[in-house]
Length: 402
Image (cartoon, rainbow, N blue to C red):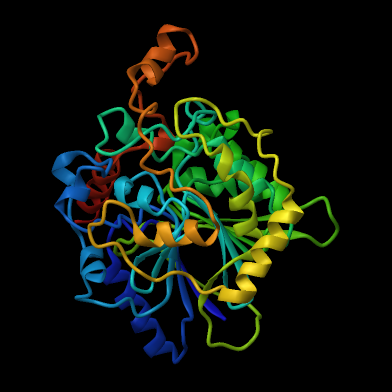
């Protein structure tokens, strides 16, 4: 199986797909799957732009809308996770994962699926310690503060991924696992990105949550993006023979290292994206403690036995099959895919539960006044760099090359 891995998409689907089609032609090969490591920007319309954390003058429709509307069809099955520049309102509709457009699948805020017999897991968003232990309290339309926190990784989603016991072949995160630079040529990295050196030395570069998942899951491959550069590492785990090959890639721009083809031994195709039995069982077990307000999830409150969940899901899949629900949203108040999945799992729909999340007594600022969130401010750390800084870097490079 040949898998194309792409760094930050930034809505530039046309160029990524055309590049891959060119590679297929000149190398006389077939690509089975495209994986994108975040900042996908699944913007369907101008309304979605209001939920995109990018300065207004840099907001652009780009090309996803053509694939959503059916004007174009993705030439390769595509799986993506969210980053920190997303149409967050649309991804919230697909919190559990689903088809963002025909042939383009969102893994959800956290998720695991199968492609053939390859298990692919992922965690959307970026790590921010201030919000990690909070619930998913943000709801569209987002205010100026919530639009910059809705994509921050939450403990609840990481906890669900930490329950995975069966082997993961590929794992995706937008930001890098903290400490990953210890396992690669970090000195070469800081020659290209000198402002990373301080964070590397202080061990603050990357996601603590992703580092915990790397230690627990030990996938064969781990792909990331976010920092707009290529970096490779090889993680030797304590268990004899267990190794994770890590690769971070750049964004889609001329002359940048944003694509890599990986070949994985597997059963012959054809392949399709299917639900994963273990992950559906985890989803069913922990949905009862889904934290929909500012308050931390009660992670010990899920009383359902995991084996009972597994047996229940298995019986359902034997009846229906593991095929994903393929209805794409078309402006519905609730995404029909999400509704169908929750009905299949016999779970309530909770994503539009806004009573307490909208209550000002449960807002982040109210917690500050009670001393629950220290040092909450709007400063943007290096991990949460916005597009203005990146565009300035690009412009500087183009000026030097002229």
